[in-house]
Image 1 (tube, rainbow, N blue to C red):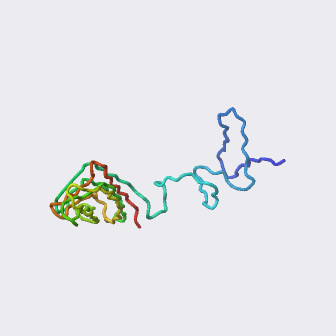
Image 2: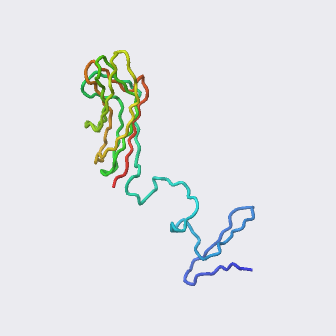
Image 3: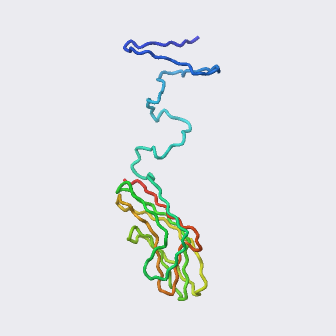
Length: 204
C-alpha cells in the first residue's frame, strides 16, 4: 500500500495548516502520480502544459497584441428624414463622434441608411458624402428617375477605414447634395433609422 508523507522544510519557520471545509459530505482527493507543485492564484503555468477546451476569454484582458484590437465602439442613430435640392453638401442628419486613444489607431466607419433621389431631368444625380469633421473622405451617387413623382428608395450601406492620426474628438457625419435644383435628395426616408458605427482599432 502506498503512503502519504508530509515533510517539513528545515529552513522554514512558519506553520503550514491544512484546513478542512465546512461540509457534511465525505470526499476523496486523489493526488496525481507525478512530481510537481500545487497551483495557487499566485502560480504561473506554461502554455505547453494546457490541454482540452479553454474557457471564454475577455478581449479587454488580452495582452501582447500590439494591433488589431477593438478599443471602443461608438454608435450614432437618426430617424430624422432630411431632404435637399442644394447643389452644395448639406447635413444628412446622421453622425457620431469619437476620441481615439492613440494617434496610431484606425477608425472603421460603418453606415447604413435609407436614401433616395428624384427629379424631372434625366441622368441627374444625388450625392452622399462621409465627412471627417469638415473634410470629405468618401462619396457615392444615386441616379435620378425621369418622373418627378416616381422615386425608388435604396439602402446606402458601406464601411470605410480611416486613419485620422489624432487623439482629439472627431465628428464623422453624412452630408448630401443634388446635381441641380430640380433634383431632391433625401436621407432617412420615411423616418427609417440610419445608423453609424465607429470602431477604434489599435494600430501598430
